[in-house]
Amino acid sequence: MKKAKKVLSVVMAVCIMAAAVMGCSGKTPAQGEEPADTKTQEAAPAEETTEDTTEAAADNAKSYKVGLEIWSTDDALGGHTKQIIEEFGKLWNMELIVHTSDYASEAQIKSIEDFIAAEVDGIIAVPCDEDTTVLMAEKCQEAGIPLVLAYRNVVDEANIAKLEGNTSFIAEIENGDYMMGYNMVQQIIDDGYTKIALIDTPKGNANDIRENGMRDAMADNNLEFVAVSTLSDSYEAIEGTNLTENILNVYPDTEIIVLSCGSNGIVDAALAKVATMGMSDTCSIATVDAPDAAEDYINAGTLYCVGGLIYNSAYYGAVILANYLQGNPLAEERVAYPQVQPIIYGAEDAALNQKYMIDALPYTQEEMKNMLVSVNPDFTFEQLMEEGNTFSLAELANK
Image (cartoon, rainbow, N blue to C red):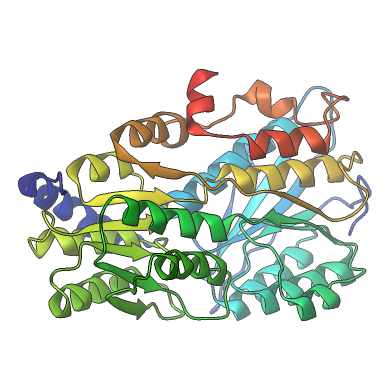
């Protein structure tokens, strides 16, 4: 069933080992004061500012400052998330301040406090768990600053109740994690694989939903994972190496190792370990969160498939925030916007992903500009929902 060529896989392993070593996987609209810059450190998050990316639009003299709290910008998903929000920001005079905190709750809360102190106009965040979401939203409510979640939504009833009436929490995602996890594993089973292992994440975080989908797919086919290993709260790349090695040493006949989280270099490290152990002909990796070289890895046979979290769902959150700040909210109440969850199988999908999502952005500047009501008065939230819910690599290629 394997199509990999061992020589190519080993050569790639050297490259991805190097990559894994170098980097891991309100104010009411239009009422904000002129923001001041800030810089944070400590056990705190790393900060990047992008002052040079702000280009004044001729028809709008007001400028904005937005904080982005994210796990990292060194991996593919985090890097492209930052990139598309920056590019969109050029169209509405937005300066982006980025804090990275590796999913550490205390550091994430400090990011929010630092953003507030810097008098940002709005915040986009990827909280590590729902308790952190609640704390973020409460601090934003106190400061009167709008908060948009990227790649996250709130599902726990107790947390939903805590956020009742919070007018600063303006948007979360419409989460498609369960079906993405289910469909990934179901496709693996449909292709004839039964010896499947899982590397999952600690319980109680945002990945629970996709992992439930993965487990249900196995149960519906009367199968059990041959092994389940769990990442620590640190989400370090070296864990991709160690857990993959442990699984293959104990269960050498494992055919597919599924990663429910591949960010921070975890998937790169896992791919490298399979190759350096000389097992690329018998074992592949299936992952959430794509490495930049997904096309090469899929063609080599080391990477079986990639599921979910295409970064334009974070962009849709930025669209909601931009219109809100410009005094043109797309909805009167908190909204749930689409999280696109495609699954990349095979060389054709990988080539499309490389061409349209890695080597380029999925939207032109003109298309992004037309998602601002200040430019296109006819743009609505319903149009944004339709765009997100019908997005696919095939449709992107046909544009």
